[in-house]
Length: 136
Image 1 (cartoon, helix red, strand yellow):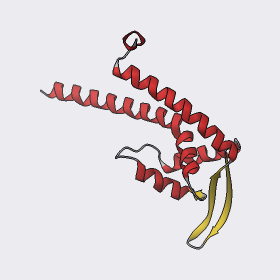
Image 2: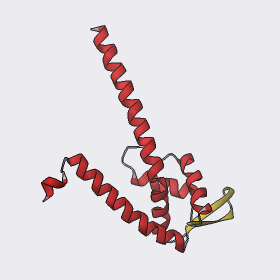
Image 3: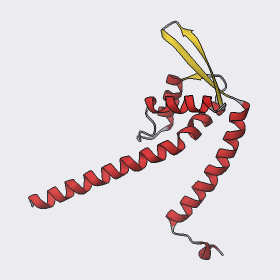
């Protein structure tokens, strides 16, 4: 009995580790798209904490992106000219950096949405087990 329980625990640990690694890899590949999309849909510039709260409202009991992890992505998007930022004083704490999408960011977002749609369609098809031969 004890050996079986140990095997189950080892399998769970391996599955949990693999799941975390897979989720991390997915997050790194989609973080820029998610952040650009949030700012593309925003009516006004947003600061980091606002973006984090928006992400928390959209997720369903799965930690998709940790707040600290998306700041480097925001900086990278800004360095690429897809976002702009400005720092403003805050009455309730340190100054806040507000981000807004640029015209180049909107154009890039439109292309990335198309790429995402094709990628999602491909992955969904493979996961459902449908081959090209079966579709014709």
